[in-house]
Length: 427
Image (cartoon, rainbow, N blue to C red):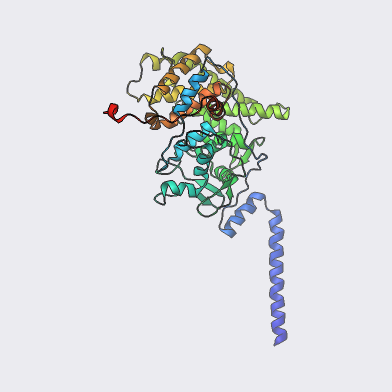
């Protein structure tokens, strides 16, 4: 009886070994994609091979000009004072913080204690505990754990980022490194790499807004030119650039102007990669690069036709001369701020061959400076996201960034608290 049981057990073990051996042999004949599909079935979790990222710090695209005729030191200081991040700590909007951090960067510091520093802004976006201090548990977390990384909740709802991958793009432009700690509701030891990998996993070339993804991927992934998303769909910077070129110029966020910035950014990164590798190959093919530059050249020509006498460009700039001949009097005034500020921003990183005459840039800057400095700071808060681009654009035109300029400015012009208003005169 004992011998029979022993034989049965030995036979069972042999069958298992044969089965495992057969499976192992079959496994070696499968493609990597087929292996991934089997793992997803067995584990019940998505299997994803992230892009190999060769850098720990994001690339930086630097400005090309230092033109005090576009904006003087005094004018730049006046504009930057207006767009300091003076936000209430209660129900702090991620979209406001993202825009402010993108303009001011992580190293931003202010003598005025009422202004959020770059570190405070970064930590609000990447530390769930900081988010809870502002929102408590009444809304869903901004940071959400996934098996494939850290997802950032977005949409036009309370406590969320407004645009897909906008948080990622802004933190990247602000200089957050890949290994920076990220504290989610479940785990205190995630990293910014987990945020980036989730964005790569989620990215869909056909989604409505791809501008932010294009910026973030461009600053992190090179020299990689091609990769795959979660559905094994081949992606590349060529495809992303073509996506930005698709459709009418009005398509995309802020009247189509963000597409212009992301396209120009990709061209500048392509320049960096070609120079770095001492090769004619960058992240864009010669064909697609030529299409992008041709497109931006058409925009330059439209800007020459659509500037109003006072210097601003209208929100409906893609309509060309019609936009000037038949002004849109129905749209809110802040839309002209959006168009003018965003155009000045992408032009600051564009070569002169893609510029309208410099006199037109001077006029546009004069208009936007006067508009920004004429507003009360509290009034600007409602439209902060638009005006933050003004601060960033004008700093770029002086070959600097807001943080670097402000530190030098405050060293020479120390902050002084404003005197309280006289209650008698206020009556």
